Amino acid sequence: MSLAALLAAVAAALAAAGIVDLAAVIGARGARPRRRPAVVAALARVGRRLGAPAPPADLERRIAAGGAPPSLRVADVMAVKAGAALVALLAALPLAAALPGRLGPVVALGAPAGGFLVPDLWLARRIRRRGRSMAGELADVLDLLRVAVDAGLSPGRALHEVGQRRHGALAAELRAASARIDLGVPRSTVLETLERRCPTEGIATLTAALLRAERHGAPLGPALTALATDARARHAQRLRERAARAAPKIQLVVALLLVPAVMLLVGAALADALA
Image 1: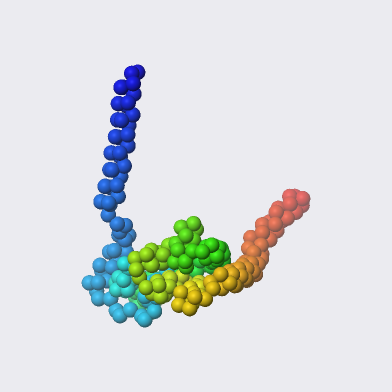
Image 2: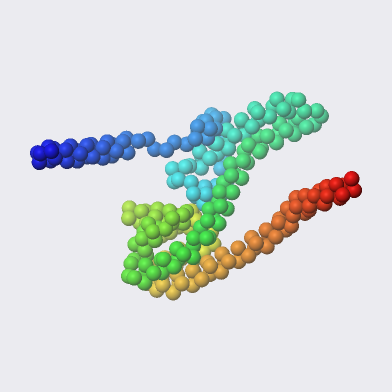
């Protein structure tokens, strides 16, 4: 192969790579954002036509603690709840008509109430899971923040660096908080949002320490060290409590499954010996 042919092949390969990269960028720009699941969107449309009731006062806080995107509105959640109640009522009417006595009206009234409350139960479960996940991350995140602050980084830059180097729900919220600071959102507002979106103990103390460091110049390193120690102590206490709750469950499994199985084996051996 001549030198000219070799150079032409290299140029063709580079051109092809550039075209592929350009196509990927155009595709990423033209891609549609993630849409809600079709069932949820359908329930929301039904709820809006039906007329959603007024939301409770703490629903916005619970939505934020559940990790919902900022674009999700309280009115959307109430529309989904109303739509779920209507669908549950329509699904329960044939069953209620077939049930004898007073069971029919009970089912007809209980089904829409259950459909209306199911999103709240799912949201509460999600908040608990996020809280447990963040509680497990908190001590390590606080240690990394202390190291970053002691190295001379500002609190906002420290949040960014720790969020970039960690994985998990808490690290994602730190990255989002750092992005809001870069966009010019007041730091007090950013920390308030961070506190609402992190449903675990210790975040309120962390945001208070960050505010003190910003307003009064208080040293942040010792406060972060104390917070990390407290977070590890709380996490260890939660693990001991979970282990204590697991012991009765294990005993129940042994009593209901293993003991009858052993008794059946003994009985089979005795029957064989007697025969």
